[in-house]
Length: 211
Image: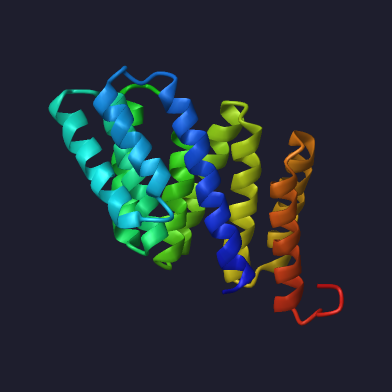
């Protein structure tokens, strides 16, 4: 597995935690929804089939009960699973539903993370223009909401997109921005992933000693 694959998985996981925390603050209290959410989060990486079943039930029940915040979170969960399992079309479709519902409720919290998931889906489908458009929307909402963590993640992911297109100078510029923000946050994991990405760029350019 290449370094680039490893850091993408890390970032997706981080986005899920951030977005869930944001939405859970406004979620309607409901023991069944909370239980399904817990099953999903507990199994999302270790048992994705079980996690998907929980997320689908979560979506079904939240729609049946008219619980819009839980509906949003369930769509987001399915989108995240799509990226993890390789069902990138599902990731894009579910994230688009998430974004539409957030905008319908005039909720800007969660949009940055959602656009990142959408961008990852497009990137994995090879649609780089749509991926870049979505990453830039993520960055716009992160800056608007003063969400430094999401802003750093956006710069990190934009850099990986430039690497895939062999635009190493632009990739490095975005990694520099990400590293600066991670350091300001005291986020050692974020800094570490950034260093892996710098090394990946040097390796791609054949600068092995420095890498």
